[in-house]
Length: 460
Length: 72
Image 1 (cartoon, rainbow over the protein chains, first blue to last red):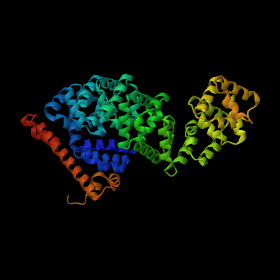
Image 2: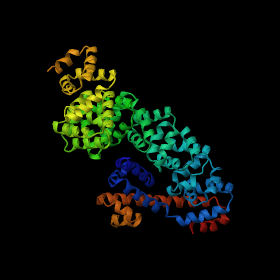
Image 3: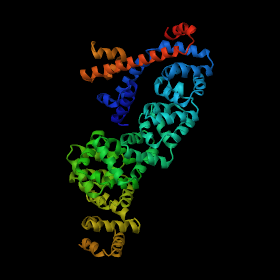
Image 4: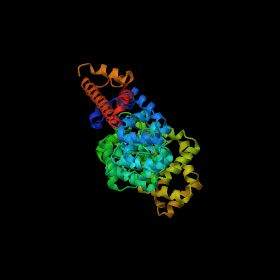
């Protein structure tokens, strides 16, 4: 999770503990999530340990009474607050026995007031049916911090029962403040696809984008990809609202990893969202990328952007010192060669030269993979630009690899070259091909009605 | 709040939390210390009320003993 989102979640939990609104504590977000966790731990000790001796005495007394009598005393005498405090000190088996005799409303009030340090012991063993009854009430009252604590400690069967009854629109705010987020992946796996889609739609309807992006950050790549693809499959209005929310509230550092987790098809769809191309959005995207070192996340999206947007984004990046070198370094480090090649025509000659040196240094297998990917993604023209910067030996090796490709690949190459009017570049490279390869290229061009163009540039 | 809010926060929340709160301005530290004190008072009052109320459930003749157990 980005530190900003983590701080927001921590502030929400602290506000619940102190009985105030998160907005009243917004100045605390600046101290960061780790600091906030320490403050919350200190506040929990301060508030819940104040009457420690009284709770110990009450728990000792509870040991002597049967569960039935305790349940009666709990409801008619102690009330939920006192029960919540004592529950943490009572034997867990006894706590479950007593809880079984209490109505859901009372248990929900106990769950709301429970000492967070003792929650696992007090509610961890609650049976599924009863957990679900409590969950309905707690979720219905938007007690998300309580719900997050509840779901963090109950067992899988109880979680399944709760998920069945918690409305879709309550899931994201609950997940955001879940006490143990390492369980999120597991919980999300239990959620069927149609409900996952409803949850994503809720992010739009109820402005829960921060919560949705946070969820994606806390789950495995597989589950993040599932969320990301669901998001990308939503309507343009939803995706526009996501882009706008990310821009206005500084969430691009969280959104870019989600776009990376998307399948190629979903990323292509997301890249077409008009709002991404707005100048103010591009500025924010580049700033977030540079500030958080997210080129690895941005490059795959950048490749899929419409040409004008891609050009505008690279232009913004070129105006930031060290941004482009950062992009190149990240692409090299993370093997994003095709993504890097896609922006080559937009870079200055010096940077193109740097990239060409790196491409020349790739092994034959990596070069072949780059050519294959460039073909699949329609990146022939940028690849030719790079190739023209390569040393003759590497040029020859690469054009040989291209010339070996099957007819469909050659057709794509020839069409792309013609569309971008890059015949001259192709001609320079093809000039060194052995006669047989050249003939094959010419035959393919001829078949496409472009034989004259190739012949013209190959003529001495 | 009479006492220096930063000292109060250190005393109540411990050194680690006080260190984390160091970047706050004096006004923010005071605001937070006040909020914390209010929460603490509210909690104590609610527990006191709950404990008192629980006594009404106890038969009159046993209240003295139970009160002693509950309140020490």
